[in-house]
Image (cartoon, rainbow over all chains, first blue to last red; front, side, top):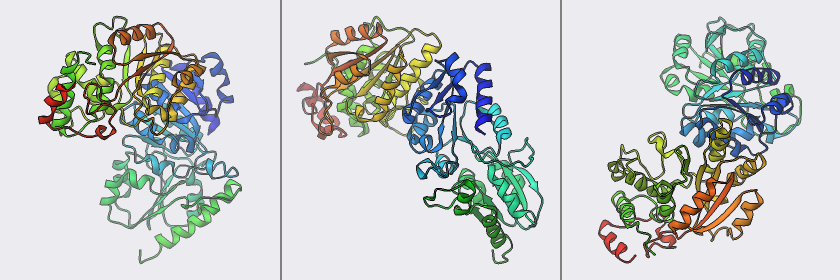
Length: 295
Length: 250
C-alpha cells in the first residue's frame, strides 16, 4: 500500500495546489522529487510528530489540505492530544496517513506496533477512519475523501487481501450464509475468508468504520449473531457505532489483536498466530461462537 | 504602576467574581500586551496579521479588549462561563472565530502559528502571525519542536510573544530564555510587558523581522496588589464586594 500511497498522493499533489505534504522523516525517498521541486509544500519536517500535527493544523486553518505521514504509533499515540485539540476540536480538515498498522514491523519490537490506533481514535468526535484492505481500495478512499473537510485517518498496511468487493458500498456482502454475520475489516478479510470458506456464515466487509450506522442497519438487522473481526484491538466498529449495536439485541463476538505486548521478533505471519488473528485461530472462534447453540 | 487600564481590570475581576471561575492573575499579566496589540496605536499592524492566544487560561484579557473594540458583544463577556455562553474559561474558536484558536492545553499555539506562517508564506501573504505564550508554557516540548522547524525552514512572519511572569520558575527556571531563542535563530527583544511605549515599539520591530521573540517581563496579577506574584490567586475568585477595595489599593 505504501507504493500506492506515494503514487496517489504525488498525483493529487500535482493536481491540487492546496495540498501540503508533511513527512515525519518517513517515506521521504518516494517523495524526493516533490520535496525537491516544491520544497515549501512537500516537507520532510523532521522527527517531531507533535509539532508536525500542530503545524499541519495551522496550515489547515489557512485553507490548505495537509497530508501528514509517518509510522502509526508516532502519530496516534505520541501526538494524540494534537490530533484531538489542534484538528478535531477546532473542526479542521486534514489527512493522517500511517504505515505499520498493528505489527507490520513485526521484527522491530513493540515501539513500532500500533494495534491500539483505531480504538484510540474512535474516541475523537468527527474523525473519519479508513482501513483499506489493499492499494486499490486506498486509492478510491483517498481520492474520494482527502478534500472532504473532515479529519481523515487512513491506516496503511503492507498486508492486503485480494478479494473483489463492491466498491460502492461501505459495507458489502462477500459471502452468503445464515448462521451468523461476520464483519471483516480491511486486510483481515483474507484470513476471515480462509477461516470460513466451508462455514455457513454471511461475510460482510468494510474498510470505513465510522459513521456507517445506516448501512449496518440494512445489513445486520436479520442476523442471529454478529461477529466482528478487526486487524487491531477489537472495539473499533462497535464503539464507532455504539447506538446501533446497543439496539441490536443479538449476541456479538468481537475478535481482534490480543491485548498484550507482542514481544516476539518474528515474521508477520508468525505474529498473526501469536495475536490469534491467523485463519486457524479465527476459525476456531467463529465455530465456537456461531455454531454453539447456547450463544 | 497603573497603565490606565483599570476599566479592564475591573471588568476582569467582576467577570471572575460573577462566574466564580477564571484565571484573573494570568489575564492581568497579559492585559497590556493584548490591549496594545488591538489598539489603534499599534500602527504597524496589518489587517491580515493574526493574534493567537496560546495560554488560553488568560482569555479574559482577550475578551474584555475585544469587547472594548466592539469586536465582541459585552453581553457575551458578562455571560462568561454560563450555560449557553460563547466565552468560557478557555477560548473556543468554533464558537467565536475571531478568537482564532481553541486553546487551553499548553504548547499548542506555537506549532499552529508556525503552520499558519508557513501557509501564509506559501500563499504569498505579507503578514505576521503573533502568538502569545506563557513562560511556564515553554516547558512544553512542542514549542521547541516548532521553533526548530521555523528556524531550519527559515519561516518568515512569525513573532513569539512571551508573557514572562516567572510564575513557574518554582518548577523550571528559564533564566537564559533570550539565549535559548537566539540559538534557535530568532531575533529577541526584552521589554517591560506593562510599558505601552515599549510594547508598541516591540510590535513595530517584530513586524519588520522574519522570526522574532518579544520577551515581555510581566507581573502576574499586575495592578491588584493582593494578586501580584501570589500563587494562591492563580485559580481563585474574589467576591464582588471585594473588588472596589482591590482596585483602590492599586
